[in-house]
Length: 73
Image (cartoon, rainbow, N blue to C red; front, side, top):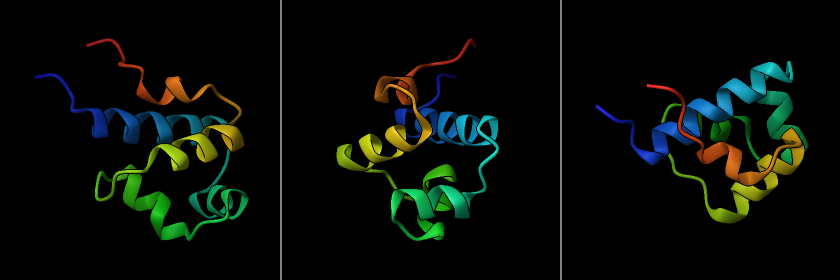
């Protein structure tokens, strides 16, 4: 079964954050949000706004579209 878009964003956010060797707390600090919010996005408990996707991708130094990219099934 294909992942939902929120699940794809969550998976990609976590993977890119870990590749950058950033904790949820450090990413949140750099973006200017609470660390719990990063965790909520990564657990699909909250959906980020378009503005938040832009802020996260800027800090992670990736094109925002990368967060929506489906992996290989």
